[in-house]
Image (cartoon, rainbow, N blue to C red):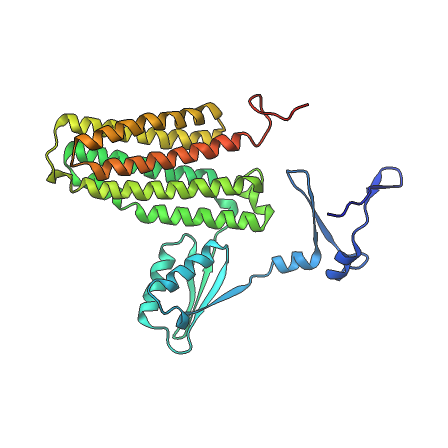
Length: 337
C-alpha cells in the first residue's frame, strides 16, 4: 500500500496527488471526471470516467445449450447467471434448441423472480432480469424465509393434531417460494459485493455485513427444506400408533424449535447478544428432549431428527448474531484505551 501526504492549497482546499501508473492505465487527462464516493467505513472511493461508463453498459453473457448435455445442466447455468447478478444472457444452439432444453428454460425462468424470456427463435433465447435492487430489503426477505419455515412447522402440528392432511399439503406447496426468495437474496448480495452503491439500497450498513446475511439466508433455506420434509412425513404418521400424550410432546418440541428460529433471526437483526446467548443455551435443552422422545416413540424418529437439524441451524444463526454484535464497540466488548 502506497502512502501520500495531504497538501493544503489556498485557504481551505486540500489535495493529494494521484499515482502516475493509475492515471496512465485509465488514460486520464486534465479535466477528466472522477467520481468520489464517501464510504461508511471511512474510505474514499475514486472511480475514473472510463470505469463509470463501462459499469453502465449491459454485458450479455452467452450460454451454449449444445454443451449443456447433462440433465439439469442448462437449468443450473441459468440460475447461476441470475445469482451472479447478470441482467441479460443468451442461450444459443448450433441448430435448433431441442424441446427438453426449451422446457428447462421456461420452467427455470418461472422459478426466478424478475426473470423473463424477451426473445425466442429456433436457435436462440434471450433472457432478461428486470429486478431493481432498491425495491427489495434484505432484512424483509430473510424474515420472510423464517416465517415460511415457522408456518410450515405450525402446519405440521395442525396435521398431527387434527389428522387433516390439507395443512401439511399447504406447507409442502411453499417449497418453490423458499427457493425463489433464497436465490433473490443471493443475487442482491452478490450485486452488493460487486457494487458498493447497492449496499445501502438493499438495507445493509456496509459490505462487512454481506457474508453474515448470506450465511443466515442459507441456514434458513436449509431449515425451510427440512420443515418441508417433516411436513411430508407427517402425512404418513397415521401408520403408527399415536397417543394424545405423544402428540403433546411433539407439539412442544415443534414450538421450542420454532422459538429458536424466531429468536435467532430477531437477535441477528436486533443485535441482542443476550438473546443470542440464550438461544445457544436453550438448544442444548432441546437436544436432550429430542433424544429422549426419539428413543421412546419408534414412529417419530424422522420428525424428531428433522427438528434436531432445524434447531442446530437456528443455533448457527444465533452464533452469527453473537459474532455480528462484536463488530462494533459496546459495553460488552470494546477496544482498550
